[in-house]
Length: 86
Image 1 (cartoon, rainbow, N blue to C red):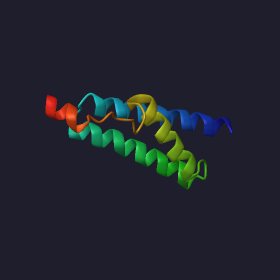
Image 2 (image 1 turned 135 degrees about the horizontal axis):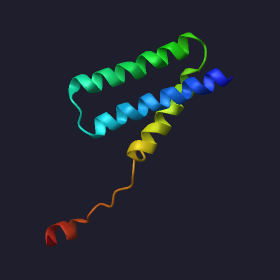
Image 3 (image 1 turned 180 degrees about the vertical axis):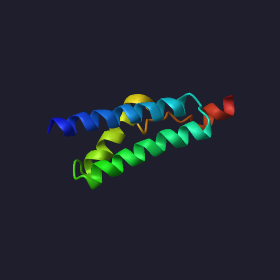
Image 4 (image 1 turned 60 degrees about the horizontal axis):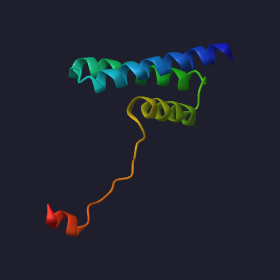
């Protein structure tokens, strides 16, 4: 079980690197390398039966939310009168 915890922590680190590179506007090659590392690591976890697809999806969603905020947010729409007055 400790091995799984360590491997999931490493996946979170790789995700953090990929999201940080994306937010920093890194070059295509750097982004592709980071995303490839994440994909390969997730494939190894799945193939080794160390994690389920659902577990990995939850980890990715949680890390994305931690780095970039929630996936959706409420927007306040201007009324037609406010738009016309502008």
